[in-house]
Image (cartoon, rainbow, N blue to C red; front, side, top):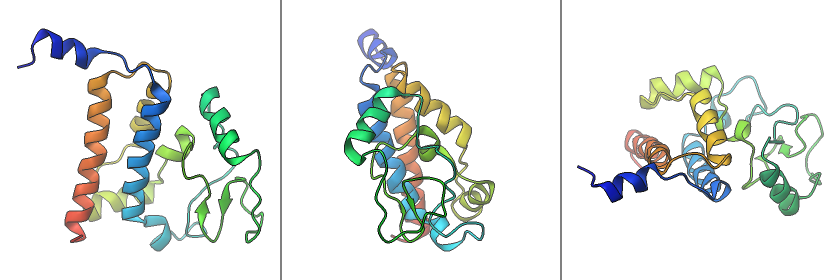
Length: 167
C-alpha cells in the first residue's frame, strides 16, 4: 500500500508536459517501428504512412515552435515528389520528423492497423484514448500515475511484439 507521501507524489501533476510528451513519443516510435504495419501490409497508402493535410500542426504552441526551430517551416524533399499533402512526408521514407510530431501524428492508426494489432499481437490500441492522454500531457495536467500508466502500457506493447515475433 502507498503511504501518504507516495500517494501525493503519484497524484502530482506533471509540469514539464512537453518533455514527457517527447519521452512518450519516443516510446511510441519504438513500438510502431517494431510493428511496421504500414511498410508491409497497407494497401491504401504509399507504404510509409497515411499522412494527409497539415495534421503536423498541433494546438500546443511550444511543440510547434520547437518543431519549426528544429525542422524549419517546410522541409526540402529532394528525392520526394509532392503528391502527399503533408510537407514532412516523403513517399520513399515516410515522416521526416524524428521528434516533435503532433498528437494526431503520434496517436492515429487506421481501423485496418487496429485489427492487425489485435489479431497478430493481441494488442488493443485506441487512437482516441492515446490522443486524449497526449493532449492532457501537453496541457501539463497529466498526473504522474497516468504518465506511468501510459509508459507502462506502451512498454507492454513493445514486449508483446518482441515476444510474438521472437525478437
